[in-house]
Picture 1: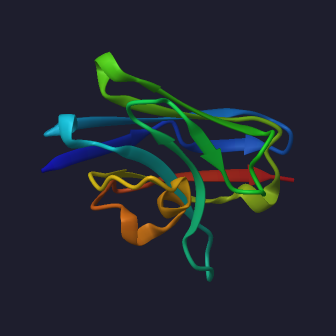
Picture 2: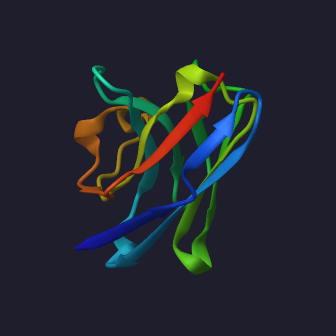
Length: 128
């Protein structure tokens, strides 16, 4: 089992920044990748970014490329999402997820079904 706890959400003005954290505990040595997803009201959950735990390679959704940065601290078993130049359309509940599945193709880590563990989520609200 892997337990995930997010923090760092809140209210920010358009153009501002926030940094989300996700602390993992439990069998973290089984983690292959950790990702962030978000769900806005009335919309489906969507992929934001993911990072491969061993290599540190990071991948982003088109909507967040250039504005968001995902990083990890292996020693702390923590993943971060630095969000800059925030827009009102970034408003959503952001959830951290961990995958213990290993794939050669990074595209698999863009899909929700690849992740076996999920955090409770943290609200991010961007005002215009």
